[in-house]
Image (cartoon, rainbow, N blue to C red; front, side):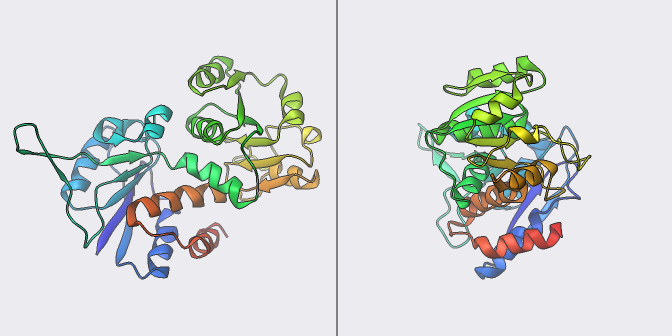
Length: 287
C-alpha cells in the first residue's frame, strides 16, 4: 500500500484526505492519505522522516510552504513562486527505483525529493474547467500573499496581463516585480480596475470570517468578468453572489482546492485523476 499525506500546523481542518482517498477508490489504487502535524521548526525534518518511512508524496500547507524549499529540488515554477505545496518522493509502487543518482566518482548519491507548486495549476485549471480563456485576458489579483503569488504567476504564464492590488502597496509592487509583465498597486482604484478586467481572483481572506464582506464593490462587477474567490468556507461568498447577480462567471474556491489536489494526485500516481469522484467527496465535506 502506498502512503501519501499532508504536513501542516494545524491540519485537523484539512479536506484533502477524503478528496484524495475518493480518487484512490475510484481508480482502485491501493493507497491511503494521512495528515502529519510537525512542530513549527520541524518541516525539513518531517520531509526527511517521510522519505525514510517510504511515504510516496506529501502536500504541504501553512506554515511550511516556504520552509520545505531547502529540503527538496523545486521545479522552476515552485522556485519562482518561492513556495512548495507538493512533494514527490519517487516512482509509484511496481516501477523501477530511481532514488539514487550516480556521482562523478561512480558512487551513488541519494536524490532529493521533487517540489512543486500546484496552487498555480489550481487557479488555471479552475478557470479552464469553467470555459474561461486566460490567454490575452486582463487579470486582476487581489492580495499579495501566498495565494496571490501563485495566482499571479499562473495567470501570467497562461498569457494574461496581470495587475496585483493589495492593501499594502509595497507588497503588491514587490510581487509584480517578480511576475513577467505585471503591475502592482493599492486598493484606491479598485472599481476602475475591476470594470476593465476580464478575470478577477480574490486571493485574500475577505469573506471568510464575515460572510457579508467583499473586497470588490458590487457595481464594478460585469457580465464579461470571470471571478474566482479563493475562499471556500463559506462556499458561496458575498463576492460570488454579487458576481452571479451581475451576470459574471463565478468560480468558487473549492474548484481551486480541487484542482491543486488533482494536479498533485496526477504527479504522484501518473494517472488521470477522477475529477468527478474527487469533487463529489470534497463538496460532501463542505456540505
